[in-house]
Structure formats: structure tokens, C-alpha cells
Image 1 (cartoon, helix red, strand yellow):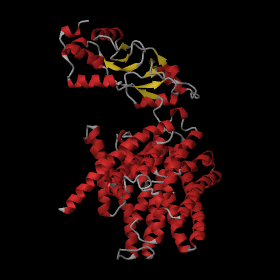
Image 2 (cartoon, rainbow, N blue to C red):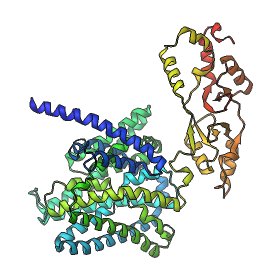
Image 3 (cartoon, helix red, strand yellow):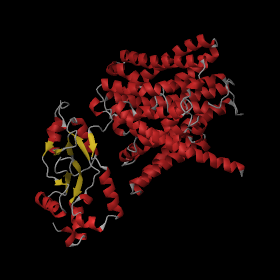
Length: 580
């Protein structure tokens, strides 16, 4: 009975703190736009502030008790990473890209190992300890935080050869880091350097390692094929997206019982679905568009695990050494690759500093070795956890900066959607909508209101007049709308996009200097204070099914109105209610 009461008390404690953490992360995420830093950095700062380093409202123990939320978020992120490798991207990558990335990864590994081994040998005076830590950290160092890196590129809409190389590296480095650290862990246990609870022979333990890797791929393919088959039967996209999340969670459950790797399973599921299903790209896009906010809890919990108060001088020194060695390894490894592989030369000065983010898989790896009570294992855990504080702040900023330098992010489009703007909704309109939808307006107000106000749909996104052609194309091709309105910074309606003109300009070789201003086409409007009959007359005159609604005085765009909604409203009301 007492244990049940304790359990309830813990649950009661978790829920409000978790809610506070999520709200705080979303608020800080909004402020990150003004500071021009990636949202993931703001999320991690939230965890640091609420965690042991800050006010200790969210303890490490409490964070560990809700790790399943982070696991689900990680599964969705890895599903997206696997899904990014569709047939089109694979064709673009080819053997040349694999060679470039493999070479860069090899040089990085060699440099990080050499630098850390020499440094730790001097610090600890223990060559075996230095060797164990260095070889393990070298494999972990290859991981460049798929969640952070992928979401920063998504947030800033990065596109180009450097972005594709980073994406390729994400996939290859994740697999190498997972396999490499698992192999090292098994070898250390077989040699009894690390405690080995298994009574199995070394051969059987190595066999279990092979099964963990191969079995994960098999399970991932099977679950991916299941989703691809089920997708044909499911008509509602919302329910299917729920099924995707459930399948990822089921894969993690299977991995626990079958001794496989949940991270590899989630990645392979995404890869299989996007390449096996006819609607694979749409499925991947649907999961991808869940947005950064759904992953906020993952980064908040990562920040909680960064406890700067526990550092001893020796551990701090070893963490600094790892940070310096890893940074140098990535930078010079990329530079050397540019000299060895000519096709990589143009990317070599940016690539190394684009791949410094360090969390996600690294956190998953250290979580697995946390229970190992040896000096080397605990030093590895502490070094990686402390380095994450630096890399997860420095990494996203350097990634964004170097993508801008490489010309794959336009500063004017940072934030991914800053070239568009949603229609504003005033407090008064919100109150009016609430009264309208709850039918609590007075009868006198209802009789007076014969305007189109209640029929206006305010959920409309417009293109800013300063948007470049690339972003206009992206917006038009990814969104379905009867028209695409163009506005200035004050949301004044200027016209709509001339789609024929857009196609013509898109064919021009050098169109980077052209903006949406060149695409403006005149379009009829409905004024916000028009009666229903006046609005109907405009529709009948111009023969459009949908028209923008603007303020008569300011010409600020307020929303959109559909002719069918107007006709239905007129037919549903008595004649006396629609007399001018």
C-alpha cells in the first residue's frame, strides 16, 4: 500500500514538472528566432536551466524515469533519418559520395584516436586506461547528433551538395558508431576488463553481437514492410501516422526481448517505408512535419543530464581534451579528405565544422554503459556527457554558419518559413469566433451582423514580397491553395503569384536575384465589411471559387472566403437576415 502511495506521489511530481519543462522549452524556442540561434540549442538550455546545473527542478533521476518519452522521440527522429534516404537521394549520392564520406570519417577517427590517446596517456599515466577510453571515444566521436543536425537543416531549409554530404554522413556515422562501440564493449567484457555477467563463451557472446546488429536490420525491414502493406488499407492519414508511432514503439519493445538494437530498427523502418510504399514520401513528410516541438522533450532531457557541478579538475581537463581533439579531428580530417579526394575539395572547408553536434546516439550509447562500474566506463560517460554541453551549443551554430557560407542557407530565409506570414488574428476576433461557435451572441447582435465576418477562414499563409524564387517555388509546390497571396511587411495584400510567370522565371539559369515582387498578379478581393449579398455579387462577377478577404481601409489581408460557404449560409438563413 505504501509503495503504491509513493508511486502515485512520483507520478504527481512528474506531470507538472514535465508540463513546465515543455512549456518553457517552447517559449525559449520562440525567443531563439529573435536571437538567430537554432531551436535545439534553446531546448537544451531549458534542460540545463531546469536540471542539476541550474535550479534542479528536473533532477537526473526524474528525467531517467521518463526516458521512454525521449525514446519515442528518438525513434521518430531516426525514422525520419532512414526516410531521408529515398530512391531519389540514393541516386544523387552514388559511390562517389560514399567514398568521400568514408574517407572523411576514417581520417577523423584516426586523428581523434591519436590525439586523445597521447593526451590521456600523459594525464593518467595509465596506457591501458588511455587506450580503452580513446578507442571507445573515437567511435562515439564519429556520431554527429542526427536529431540536432537533421532538425537544424530542416529548420533553416538547407539544400545543396554539402547538405547531402552531411545527410550521408549522418547515416554512415550513426551505423559505425553503434557497431563500433558495441564491438568494443563485447571485446572488453570477453577479456574481463569490464565486468561480464554472461556465463556464455566468447564465441556465443560475439554471436549475440552479430544477432543484435543483423536482427535489428531484419526486424526493421519486416516492420517497414508491414507499414507499407497497411498503408494501402488505411484511408485516414491521421490514423496511419498514429500507426507509424505505434510500430516504432513496438519495435523498441521487440528489441528489449529479442536483444536487438532499437535505434537501428527505427532507422531501417523509415528507410523501408519510404522506398517500399507508393506513398512513402508522403508518409515521411507527414512524420517530418510534426515539427520541432514534438522533439523538444528529447533535447530538454539531454540538457538535464549535463551536470556541470560534478566536474573534478581531472575530469574537466579530460573533457576539454576530448572537445579539442574531436574538433581538431573533424576539421583537419575534412581538410585532408579535400586534398585526397578532389570531388570533396569544395566542401572540405565547411564539412568538418558542420558535423560537430554531439548528442542523440552518443547519449544512447553512454546510457548503455552507465551501469558498468569501472573507472574507464565511468570516465567515458562523464567525458561524453560534459562534452555534449559544449557541442550541442557550439555545433548547431557552426552548422548554420557554415551552411550560410556555403550558400545553402539564405540568411533572409533563416527559420525556414520567415519568407511567409500567417494572417494575424486579433483578440477581438478570437472572442467573436468563440461567441459565434458557441452560439452565445445576443439576438440583437446576430441580427445586426449581416457581414461575411463569420465565414472568413483566417488560416491563410501568404508569401512576403521579398521572398526569392527558390522559396516561392518551394512554398507553391508544397502547399495546395486556390491562390497564393503576396504581402509586404505590414501584411498589405499586393496581389497573387502569377504561376505561369513563376514557371518561366524558374527556367532561367540565374534567377537568384528575382523576388516575389516580379510575380505579382492583380486579383479581386472581398472587403471585410461587405454584406453576404455584396460578397456574392463579387463572386458572380469574377467567377472564382475562393477570394482573399482584406481590410477595406488598410488592405491588410485577413483571410479567405469560399463561394460554396457563402451560398450555403445564404440558403440556410431566412431572407430577412440577409437583406442589405
